[in-house]
Length: 252
Picture 1 (cartoon, rainbow, N blue to C red):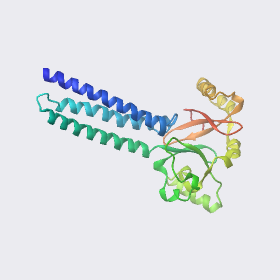
Picture 2: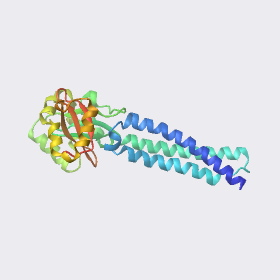
Picture 3: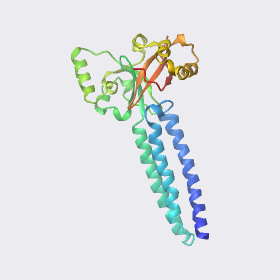
């Protein structure tokens, strides 16, 4: 009985350490790689919870299984070293997976906004992007746009590739800075008042998103926002076209 009490004590300490490490990892993931709302839009929350849940649970359980107070101190230290090393290796691999899937750009894709993730970007095409966009950001997505097609042949090739599963927004050879596209963004965007009229049954949710921007409804426009498996709506400043807010509403 006494040995089991010590096992539980050791496992509890291990759990506390694991939770502290998980909290640090959460700050890294949601503070840098998946800032709001990308934790939800890009699936970062689900990926992180899966990685951390396995790591936080398995480490203390292994400690509970192997801890034996009758073992020599040297052997106990060796056991904990092995368990800790395996746990950190698993967490590191999991975090690398989350990092590799991080959102890198919010792209104006001619008539909508699309989220591009690092894993979607072809490394060969990345070399054809403007020099300022050839390095993928690690501190959250930046806002960019797709340039106009040079000719019908380029448009046909890009559209064909999109139909085969290579989304236009991930075509780094089509990327450009957001500034030249602002007028086109505002031309495609619609007044938020129309959004409220279309989705009157979700007016409360829309009003909360409007209030969070700090702008009156007359100063806002919207575009649909497409990510991996979900569609949201982005609220834009009617003068600058800067994204100011997001809401989980499919406005296509």
